[in-house]
Length: 439
Image 1: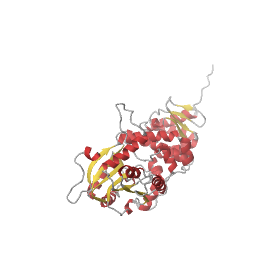
Image 2: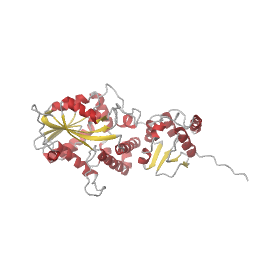
Image 3: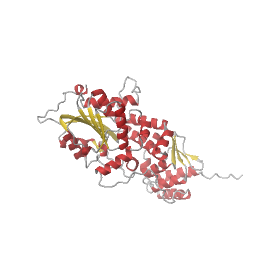
Image 4: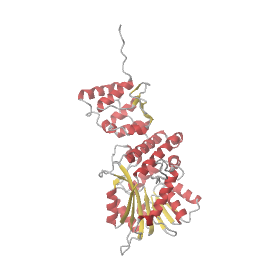
């Protein structure tokens, strides 16, 4: 009796080709454009909706190819996206498809399969949400304004979907409220805790004057004015942020205490201020401009005035601007630089600031990002309507990847650095113990 052999399906051939070229098993389920499926049972399925998805990965066999395939909608991720992003060596191995296979014959066989599946056609057109053009010197005022606009002027209503009513776009402060490890409060509680922590570290008191550099949608300015009766100047380069913040200030009846400006921090000259906050802003400054940043903030502080700098940091050696072929540089933060904490401390001390306290908040940001991912997923239809499908996919991938970056010790962290401008006689004006100046 003759038994007719069954030819491998497109999904089986594709998965086998990738595994052969990469030299590792890929523990995810795969579905192809013809409906065929392959791979082990998994809580994540990678869907190649068309042959163009394969071409995108092969033309840019690194993070950028995967990002473009996903952002364009040619590749979908069903199920737990965090599971896919945590697969060891997956992206690194994709970047070296031609040399990491078990042997040359296996790699050539895989390439032949890609050809038969239509994976080596013309280079696909990049998605429409590519990064804004970079013009001018890096970290010049005009180029910084363009980069900030690219990231923040996406639409206030879109940001509200995942930030929630506090509109705070930095990590919350998740205060564990009982012996139960999960009893840590809501996102809104965590963000309000963080705003108050910043105010207490700065020692705000009635009548003081606060400069909020990179004021976002005005949340810290409003909290400081309402709870501590200080006057605030908030500066941002985002017109959409400024409009939202100004409306919130007016609605809260705080226009006599808060001024929101569209202004580069380098153009602020109306010091001195009793305190300066910079929350999630110095990542836009860059390594080369960090000494100027530190010096200008020092010049704007009165003697014994405090500066709180809240910024993401790399826990590896300095690598410049990061991966220029990847998700963040191309789609999210053009010209953004995540620097080691030592760079910030050195710049502050060289400028004449005295560093008094450093607090690491890595786990807090991981929790915050997980909360943002959940909210964006829960409002997915609205996200696609407000920002478009491609941009919504970009942001979901960015937030999920960032959450994992903070969860995996050795990649990213975040610090609040409290510094002071000493008086001429060397006095810091700070109480001797942390418990006292935290209040």
